[in-house]
Amino acid sequence: MRGWISGSTTERTEPARADPPRRRSRARPVERRLNKKRRLLLLKGLVWLGGLAPLVWLIWRGLTDRLGANPIEEVLHHLGDTALIYLLVTLSITPVRRITGWNSLAPLRRPIGLFAFFYLTMHFLWYAIVDQTLDFEFIIEDVVERPYILAGFTAWLLLIPLAITSTKGWIRRLKKNWLRLHRLVYLSTGLGLLHFYWQVKADTYWPIVAITVMVVLMLLRIRRRKPRRERERTVAAKRPSQRSLAD
Ligand code: HEM
Image (cartoon, rainbow, N blue to C red; front, side):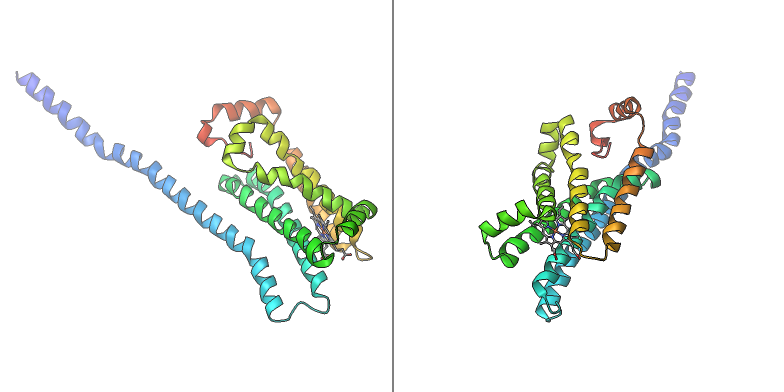
């Protein structure tokens, strides 16, 4: 009886002593997840700020008459430059994530990529509506006869299915084909760079800087890429919720 009492007492007290560490170990992941959520929210907020800033700046320059002697060309160039910068930033997310191990960058690829597409569409619409006053005959002639316009136009067309299928529903529906389809972003950025290089008249400094950035990003991707089998094993070992598009 005594033995039972003492035994039961010890049995009852031992888990009580062991309780606090167990509670702490359960609370930590929740805290960590909350911190992660807060960090992600902050990063997404920064992406939205950075994404809308060039548009707000352009509108402010327009309203205060600071667009220079040729405002139509200035807006066209500003939109093209912004789109190209955001395309390159989108492509830099995976190499930077792999080098720094900062995985919270992965979910930022989609909003930054969509901002790139938004500015590109504005660039095209500005060209078609304001610059060419919707003269379709002239626009078609321009696309067919000027290689730099053809390159830019093809680049924009290639990005349309990527923007449409960037939602979670399409990622689930297309499975492996989603990754294959979204590799078109490299071709599109390449054509965008060609378009940029071809349209400058004399000073090729910025197009060459942009092309160098793209080449470095591609080299980093190739160098840091794990062998395919190892990559598939790593992805398969993860729970679906842990898998990222960048895998
Ligand atoms: C991925 C696609 C594209 C990218 C990355 C892009 C980017 C650029 C860039 C960076 C510039 C030069 C801006 C500067 O000099 O500061 C530019 C100029 C221009 N873009 Fe695009 N663009 C693209 C697609 C298009 C499309 C679809 C059109 C129209 C069909 C277009 C029409 C033009 C025109 C007319 C210029 C001005 C050329 C000049 O001033 O002579 N672009 N673009």
